[in-house]
Length: 361
Ligand code: F6P
Image (cartoon, rainbow, N blue to C red; front, top):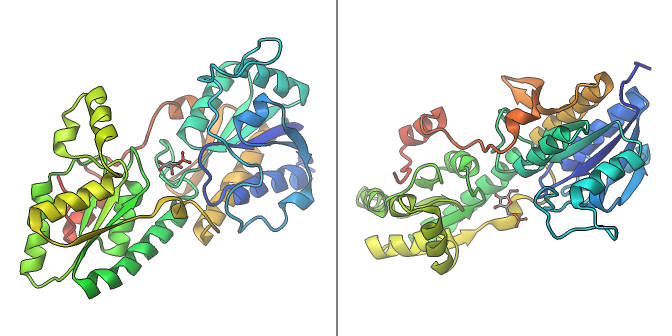
């Protein structure tokens, strides 16, 4: 058996669930136990379980049959220990103190966290507190910096593309504009990629504020050229040119007064500007649920086993990442507090425009 610097490590999943989490847990744990002989302590429901010491040793049998399963066998939560002012132990200690205490109590040499931007930012802050931490990039939004891709994204992309394909039937049968709203508050990767994959006629992403006049012109041109329907893909974080000029507070206030989510507003605006009958579908949590596609299973397994290698060599304080088809470790400090949005000169935007997609801006 190869030597390992890490003998015992903790593992947790945090933030929104994403397809591939179980494949990643299995990848880390199988390699860590079978190849290096480490002990694995699982914490339930993300950082919340670490604060409350909801911990148990995980054994090889628990990793059988989970590769293709959605969700996370460990459970998850959106607990952010460094922002948690409410939690306090009976003797008055705060969330971060309890994490440090439970890390020590469980005899951990390292903590492996699987999650998105918030999770990896917390991981960095814990590393600054003196804990050994390794992060894995999970999210359907694909908005984590320093990695080309996150696991979960390809499954969501497949689900969203299938939904767009299905909407074509109703769009063409009824001569309608079908608006589909997808996840992605800050980054439009999912809307952009599924818009291209599904042949969306209009794709609206947070990075390119839209003007309803541009959208209306595009849809009317399509109608004049004999196209009897249109598909409009909207990221949940899409915003208008007018909104982009607002200060954060004024923007928030305007959004609080909005009826329904952004997809509904875009449909109303399209009907108002063009008179074209419009309908809305909000895909919601269907994008995050269910079995991961093969790509995500492979990526998550690869990230998991890479994390086990990093545990063995004591390569802590890093997030596993994919760059130019190579799995590497990047310092957590480079990942913390950042979001990977779609650069406005990104090749995929050129592709979208070149195939006739209106990006609204
Ligand atoms: O996982 C990220 C994400 O999918 C975002 O795109 C979305 O806004 C968010 O999760 C919503 O999740 P929840 O309702 O679980 O907080």
